[in-house]
Length: 239
Image (tube, rainbow, N blue to C red; front, side):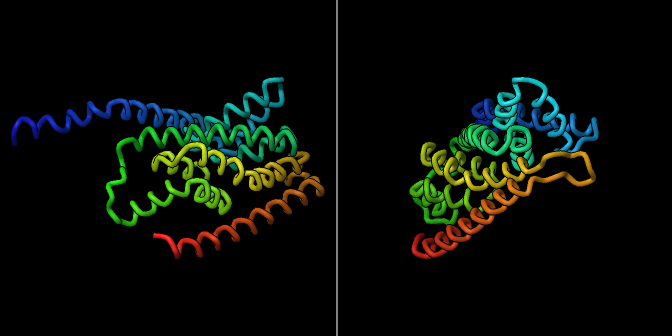
């Protein structure tokens, strides 16, 4: 083995040192959250309960909610739990507004994290492989593809990371995310807003708010099926 071959791994490591540092920081955040939850014997729902107590005890509640929601993808915390919490704390109107703002910020963070770690990978080399064809299609039809992904309830953060990794154009991505996430956000915030108390074995629910959230949820399911069928039909005519 010559000197060049021996030094190659070290040169590659040095070239991507900034990515390794960022990855270590990211994994550290995840480990810190897991340590906190495990050491205090807390489930994600119980972690949110502690956050609820903090958010309802002062005027900083909305800012804390938006910041935590925005940073949530970095520790892989489930978005649904925080969305329900937003509805419970802030009600259906402010809950939707805060959650839409926070979810778009969190999507932006996840997008650029994916773009950072995907830099230099999966470049369009002109080949006709399955992955390259799908990546090319996503880049060419960014808005439509991301909109379909949001409507059919694919994992929220995974879509954002994938969009960044594949270098989908940011503005079509975030616009499709903002529009495509509204029905689901309204439904889950509505579910949270319908919870009036946690006093009993089961939460006390507001039937009007719950009915509205169920109607929006069914509408979002119908839209997801419609877009999924359209995607299937259109996909048959595309590479």
